[in-house]
Image (cartoon, rainbow, N blue to C red; front, side):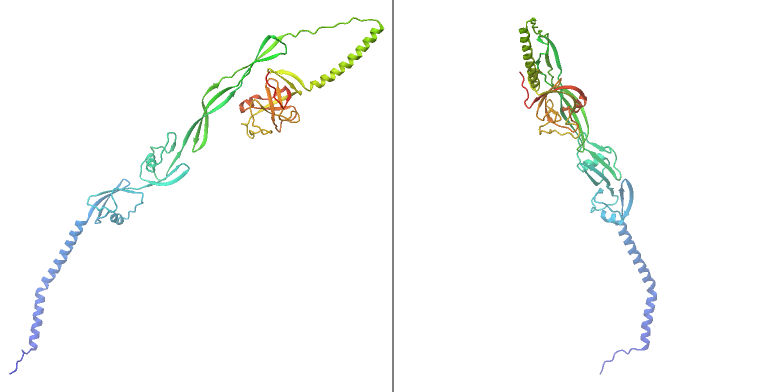
Length: 403
């Protein structure tokens, strides 16, 4: 006996489809309602999540306050979101990697470009400081008491502020000026006329001038005298001038004799005297080329006596060196410039009213009976002017010594 399954008929399939349609129709409303509720719940959840992460942050840039709503949790992310870029020199009140909290206040100070010129160099710098003084402190620029700063240290810094520092140095140096001595002549009745004796040798004094020199960045800009004092007093030269009259030479008178022998003898004597006088004149002429005289207490022989015009010069004048034509160093009280054809170089002379000098130098304008006398001071050389008709005794290569 076999087993047979239930026979499926056409009527059973129709019954199943009807049931499904009936269930769907009855539950469609519940399905739609459930879908709507699910979507609503999802949106509410998203809104709740979003509202819980969104926060308000106050951003202060260069004093301007701006309220920002963001859901970013890191400062750098919020700045990127707001398209705010920063320079490395800008200052921020909190780290860029710091986390943001609702109600946080973030302050950003933008760095301003400034130009600083100091010690010969110019640099472009960025700073957030407010005043010139603060900028210099920030970059370690030290100032001395006399330095000049432009603009002033209290001036506020703006875009493209140009700060300039001038280093000011002051130096006080001593300058020595020679003080010429006077020549004082006193009458001495114990000496005969023409006999002059030096009682006291003159010695120039020394004046010390205190000179203040001001330098700006190593360049001298001013110089002034802030004081002076006499270091060494002058010692006047004293000369005793003889006033005693010279004794008159004795007068020899001879009696006239009329005898012929006497006349002959007289003629012979006259002839002899004429010859002797002529010889004496020649001898005197020869001696005149090497005569002796006493000046400034010194007895000396001289080769010739000339009259000259005289000027003065100084090494302080432009184009005048300190070396002479003979290779010596110019020295006040010794050096003169001459025409070598009149006074040989290296020879000593005595200038009336001035003293002994040595011919050591030459000059383009020194021709003939002209002499240029050397002074250290340009002022003294200029004050000397031009003098004419001065007596000059040309001595020789050896300076006379004091008696």
